[in-house]
Length: 577
Image (cartoon, rainbow, N blue to C red; front, side, top):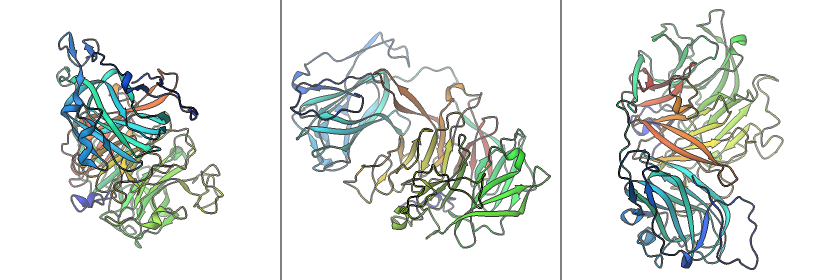
């Protein structure tokens, strides 16, 4: 069981396009409400005539020149099927015979995953419905694209489905796919599928200019001690502030690490493992006030959020200026969280607190609304009264059963989260247990109050504590996840808004502590059917190089992307030049 960095090296700092319409073959006597916009094509199986499979033309296959046209086919038959329950029958859902089926013998949440034998350019996904009684169902379709990630492609809620229909999702233009996961979140019957078809052709390797995709890590500076976080002050100085786990903040400028720490509070920080100095955040007005905020583990093992002041020397802060704002007792020395960031729109301080759990154990207090464990908090540190004010707009403000600081819940160890400085959207990376690492997305329009699923769910599936039948009711599921074949602990993370890499504009860039892989998660919106829905796709930027173990991916004031190596104390810039 993994608790974060300690899982691999014993040092873990805190981690341990489709346009669609709705068609039905026969209308029931009483049609359920269809308040959601149509998201799929539903066709009766008996009417799904033996139409010729799609032909992908050269204009659709943009990755490589290839032949003028290639005949698409059902490539799922050559794949491998796995399921949340009754897995020995999962193969029946991809055998080409809709008369045989996989049945979980359980209600949702259940899943079926088809791993293809290669990367395929996919034009359509067809799912033959096995359902009795008929009624509204909620599904998500997730796609893998050869990067090791699976991302949410389509969600449709409360759609009326019935026995024998074919749920068809068109991918226009076709996309590269190596895995398809179908998550059934709710259904009036046991979850089952008669057939899962993936219509496509084997993808050719993309033709790219030499070096176009050759991302690398270029060493900028060294000599840091166990670096876990980096930030900039937004004051026009171009300085990078690197947090050292034992209790110091160092300044890096023009490739050099200042010999004198910006702040040294090693005398009050308990380190290391998953404890130590871990968080640093500069408010928008730092250039005028000189006030900044840190998160660390105090001598008693409690998560501490404090305010400090800089001195007349801009490269030095006053360690004696500390004002402790918030202290959260921790039942154990892992899953402590401690990351923090200021919201770019509201100016409030957001704080990630882990569930305080022990390896393989769900800690009940971390689940309750009367504790700050396992939560994202939001507080106002700029308008008084001291030590902070709870915004009245917080989702549980005034509710006697909840701590009013709570902004969101259901997180395990939200070590790295980041705001998009342009849109105000929030990306939350949450370290998993034994199955998946995940990314949750909270749009800027959110009023808060989301439950991101832990411990019922881990990633986009049920957690080991609810292995065959967890409920997704009331939960907000992640938008991307990866398994432990790709690494051990997700590390955040920054939304790229720089000028060097135009195609990454608006992408969330993150990595993995153990493997050193770095990905970019891209969001797009589909409005072809008269409504808007997010789609997600991952891009693998780096397979893993010098920054292993990688403790942070972040940005500088000019938008440059950086990564930290926890062991060697090195700072790298991520570049494609």
